[in-house]
Length: 103
Image 1 (cartoon, rainbow, N blue to C red):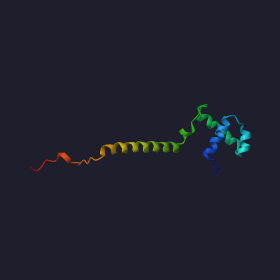
Image 2: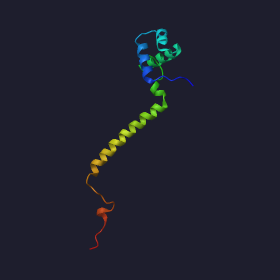
Image 3: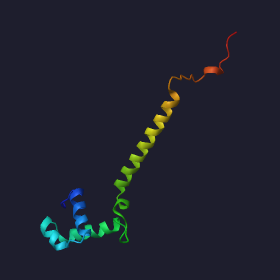
Image 4: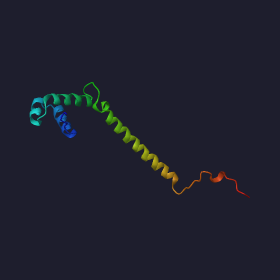
């Protein structure tokens, strides 16, 4: 099973790579393989729009699903708040005024 680095560690390494630090020096300092850093730099350039390719957040289906869930939960919260405004103090019977009186 491959070793996984934290997203914060990876982000900081990518920032340093994009700032111009050499891969070999950074690899020795961080104890990360040079090939790994080259891949991270290539993806960081794509994500920054400086290179052509598929952005990392577009390729990750799980991340897309989580964003969609977050959007839907926010929309549901708004709908609930709006419906609460209309329901305050009003009790509506399903057959309320349509019944004829027995007079």
